[in-house]
Length: 96
Ligand code: H2B
Image (cartoon, rainbow, N blue to C red):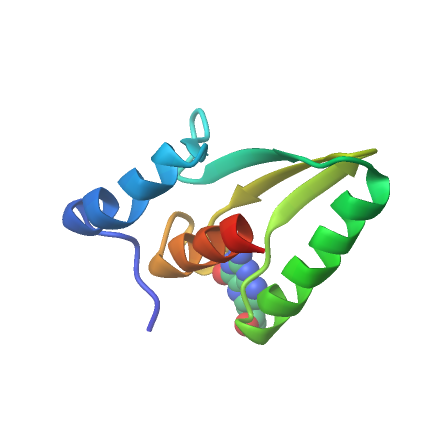
């Protein structure tokens, strides 16, 4: 059963992500980050790798791509806000 992050979990799970460039979305319980790559192929192949993890974990990003830039927003639609799955996927996206 997936749950909204508690205040304590927000401190332990979100604060390290804020250090790597993730930020809260204005007016919404969601996190976002802009990833900039060297070119379109690098951006799109990163999205392809990310898509495999998203599908494996049944947790999908909201994202858009323009040339070498990918804007990602993470939230858990089933709970209308942030859950541990968003932190887990964010950490994975940072390492791909
Ligand atoms: N992705 C995200 N980001 N949030 C969800 O709540 C979610 C999802 N739910 N991917 C999954 C799919 C759900 O709709 C299916 C039925 O498992």
